[in-house]
Length: 319
Ligand code: MEV
Image (cartoon, rainbow, N blue to C red):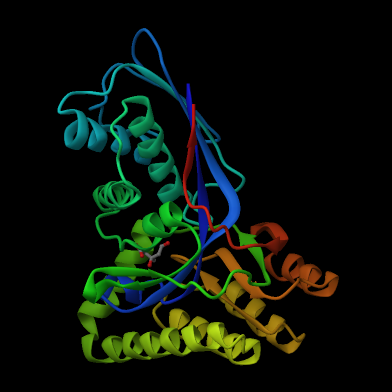
């Protein structure tokens, strides 16, 4: 049996714009997906908090575990040149699926890393990240490399899609963050498509929004390095307003972010594809802020986590 652990990812700046080639900043965090892979005599068995799924073939259409099955397919085609042998895959996640913390990217990265070890394929972290990104693109239609690369490499990462480069931000080891999770109504695929629709229709305006998000991202890089939390917070709020203008927020989230600002949170924004999911807050959540989140989100409130640390390891594998 092989076990891989891949960190979840919080999006600090630049999500959505990154899909169109603009900069983004993401951070691997100390919450990890665990994928256990073991050979079995026949068929494929996948267990996770989505349920239990048995498959005779890897090429079955309409599966529940889309990312796991796509990762098995990509590894079969690109590495083995034949189907992966019958395996049982167990996925454990510290957060619900589609919560804005890149669970799907971390699942893809963890499964590919475990398979690489199981078959002694010796894939490098860059190859694992590239294959993880391929899995996301095949399942979602459009995806930037941000989530899969950050989960694979760990740490805080500046994504520079135009130069096809991801740079680890070396001199920031810690960041005082909290997160609030809210139930989502729309999937990442739908939200990425929402932005594409508005981009196709109002290209000149939306490109200017993306350019502003890009500037925010580069300013945030400097603020992170100088530990200028006041500026970082202001940039988070501004990035949130721009995400909202792209149609990926909702009334409850916008109201919550305004309340957090009024009650003194240093910075807050949606993180990830949007419509709920993760709200990332700069600094510790006070009881008052946590209570505000519960009251505003009501039945869409899922949970709040007060101590989120940066994970610097990235994906790890053990026999
Ligand atoms: C999703 O976690 C982040 C998006 O920017 C999509 C992507 O980068 O693939 C919305």
